Amino acid sequence: MQRCEHLEEIKPVTPSAEGCEDCLKIGGRWVHLRLCETCGHVGCCDSSPNRHATKHYHATRHPIIKSFEKGEDWGYCYVDDLFYETLPEAES
Ligand SMILES: [Zn+2]
Ligand SMILES: [Zn+2]
Ligand SMILES: [Zn+2]
Image (tube, rainbow, N blue to C red; front, side, top):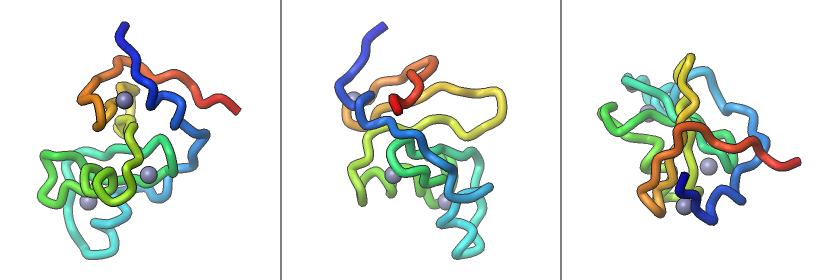
């Protein structure tokens, strides 16, 4: 499987909220949730009106997200536009 250098930026994170943290602030709605693997920010996917996960990447340059949907553990690197079926665990 192809891997990228950004896997090193995966940290042991605690999700920031049960839903999209930015949508919760503004009363927005989301479709699916994504978890930032660098800081634990929970944001909404690109099918959601506000696309907060992608906005979080542009604001912070945190490269790797993971699905925050039950039963899904795929991940994605924004920098390399690379999908991972599963992400490695954070090194502690
Ligand atoms: Zn990468
Ligand atoms: Zn959102
Ligand atoms: Zn982040």
